[in-house]
Each structure stands twice: as C-alpha cells, then as structure tokens.
Image (cartoon, rainbow, N blue to C red; front, top):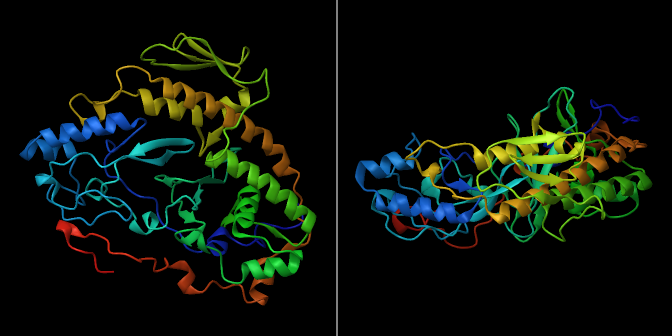
Amino acid sequence: MPGVTHDDAPLLADLMPWSVAPPRLGRGWPTAPDAASLKARWDALMKAEGADREVLLGPTRSRTTHSAVAQLPGQSSGTGRLARESGPCPEPVRVLRAPFDEQWLIPDHRLIDAARPELWRVADERQAFVVEQTAVPDSSGPVLLAASVLPLTAGRGGRLRPLFRRPGGLEPNLVPGLLDHLSTRLDHSPDPLDVLAWTVAVARHSRNGCAVPLTADTEVWERGVELGRQTLWLMRRDGERPKLPGGRRPYVRAPLPARPLELHYDRAEESLYLDEGRISPVPPAAWDFEVGGVRVLEQWFAARTEPAQPGTLESIRPARWPQAWTSELLELVTVLALLAELRPRRGELTIESPITQAELRKAGVLPVPEAARRPASVLDHHEEGPEGQFALL
C-alpha cells in the first residue's frame, strides 16, 4: 500500500481506544453448535447432586458450584449458588465461538470464569465488535474480523473493540476529535460505521501493532469504505443472506452421512467431502481461507465432530448431523469465497494524501485521553448481584 509506511500510520489501539480481552469460559460445555444440546447439558447438570454436580461443572479457581456470582448484564439467569440451582436452562444466545463460527452459549455468569460484563452491557442489535487476529507469516488471512454477536475469541494477545461505548449505537468508540478531523480533511462527514468499514478494509499488521492507514483523498476513502462495507456484510452476516452467482453456488451432490468423521477437499473437482457426502462447487479460495494460520472450514468441521470424553457434558450432542449444520456450511463456503474475491481490491487501494500519527498529534486528536480507554458508565437500571442482591456499581 504505497504512500504511507506502517510506522507513520495511526494504530488501531489509538483510533478505537477502548478494548477488552475476550471472555474466558474456563470450560467448553456451556457452548455448542446447537442450542438443544446446551439445554440437555443443563438438565444433566441439574439432575446431578453434590460432588457429581461439581465434577460435571468442571471447577476452576474462578468458578465452583459454590461461587457467588452476579447476573450477566441483560440476561435473566439465576444468581443463587449453582449447588442449589434447580431451575430451567437460561435461554442460549448466539456468540462467535471461533472465526466465522457462530455457536450458542448458556449466558449464565456462574458457568463463565471471566465473562467481561462491560461487553455484555453494550451488546445489542446496533453493536459491532472488532476482533484482532494474530500475525502469521505468509498468511493472507484477515487482520481484523467483525461480528454482530459477542465474540469469545481473538488472536493470541488480541483484544475486542466494540464500535460503540453505550447501548443503542451511542458514543462511538473512536478517539475524540477523529470524526471532526476526517470531516475537515475529506470535506464530508463520515459516520462511525464508515470508519469501521475503512478500518476493516485497510488494517495491516505492523511492528507496533495493528496499523490503520488513513487518507485525506475523498475518492480513495470512498472506495475503501465501499470495500469495507461489503466485507462487514459478509463477516457480520446479519442482513440479506449472501449468494454466489448461479452455476457457482455450492450444493449437496451426495447426501451427508449421519455422523461424518473426516473432511477432505478435492481441488481438481472443487468438491468438499464429509466422508462419502459431497458438496460442490467449493472454490479453492474458500477451502484455503485461513484465519491465524488455521483453515476456517477445517476448524468449523472439527468443532462439530471431534470426539468428547464419555461421561462429560461435552459428550451430550446431536446423535445425527443436523440439517441446520448443512445449511450453515453451505453459507460459510459462500462467505469465504466472496471474501476471497475481495482480496485483490484491498491491494489496489493506494493511500494518497495520508493522515499520519504526526498530523493527528498536531491536530490534538492524539494522544488518546485516558478516559477514552476506559468503559463508559452505561448502567441505567439495577443489575442483580449474587444471591439476588442488587449490584452496586
């Protein structure tokens, strides 16, 4: 990307200053690719008593069946000790469990070692989360992912950055003064989603962290924002479902088995095999699509087929491959293929009239005010604390 070096480009950590480490579950069973399995796992936990319930939970230093834990913001799970719990399973919610892999989570704070309540307070239909990825040599994978649901993952040492600091799409998580400075330099007023789209389109790994080259060239900006908005649409998958042109759409050509065990790709015939089941056409670019050096399709398949230890809650799972997973797989192939087609356009973006760190410092946008790196105070209602007490924040 000629015109600006990564050393001159502003850093994501400064442009979107509030960041949070991803939630840490501490145990795998509260998440699953299907909601029904989670409810069955909860029921199994409720039927167990005493030490058996403790073993099934998977105790850690942060959580046991006797931990006193506040309610997750926006959720309605219980706050009594899990050892005494007997109620129904809290309604599972969608989360991003791994890159491009939306799964389900039991949103119960008693099951999660480090839930990051500040993220739950701002997670709503207006929110978008930016997920940093690990730099991998010779990898063409994305530097940033974006999600509409709460991510549970980031690259090694990566952070989650909400686009908004308050619910309802209020108070963008952008360094104060950035939008005004861009409005002056671009001679029009970009909104927060424009800045997010540009960021996703141009972000690059640098020795100082994730760099986001900025431009004062209106034409280049508009092309970058358009590219970024297409990328966001594919990554967030919260609007019209993406489709490949006719003749290139993947279909099930041979029925998938009840419990596939192996995933194999035939590059010559552009076919994806789940044992003897076959899906095609699957473009090589979709099969080769990596995040953090890991093939997305392989990771997605493994999350649904790797054996679990018998007797654990993780072992409670569908007896047969659900039809919904086939539909999700076909859509995932489509998303990865379309994202791969956008890659050449990223390379064509030449940053003219760069807006550098030095310029932002001179304009008073940088350095970042310390308050911008802290979460906003968003509490406008009582949150239930341990044992039904109101949390005092």
